Amino acid sequence: MARMPRIIVPGQALHVIQRGNNRQAVFFAAEDYQKYLEVLAENATNTGCQLHAYVLMTNHIHLLLTPEYEASVSRMMQGIGRKYVRYVDQGVRTLEEIKGSEHLK
Image 1 (cartoon, rainbow, N blue to C red):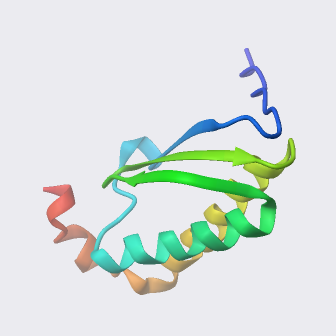
Image 2 (cartoon, rainbow, N blue to C red):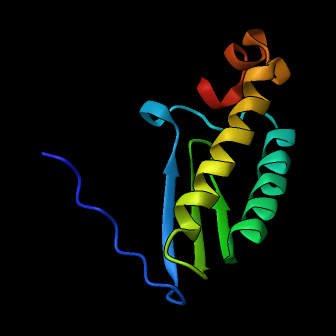
C-alpha cells in the first residue's frame, strides 16, 4: 500500500527528518557538514521555507521549518538532494576516504 501523502500547512512549523540510504552515513568529513548547510540555506530561501533549527547527525538530519507554500518543503528537499548528492558523487569524497571514515567503523 502506498504511503499517505504528508499534510503540509503553509505557515505551520514542521519537523522534517532526512536519513541516509539504509541509515548509512550522510557526512564523511567536516567539509561535508558545511556544504550541506550552504545547500540547505540556499534552498530554504529559494523555496520559501523559514528554517528555525537544524541538527546534523552522521547518518541523518533534523530540520524545524515553516513552509510559506504547500509545495515549499518538497521542493526544498528535492533541491538539497540534487545538489548535495552531486557534491558527494563528484568525487569530493573518494572511496578510500569513505572506507577510512571514523563514522563507519
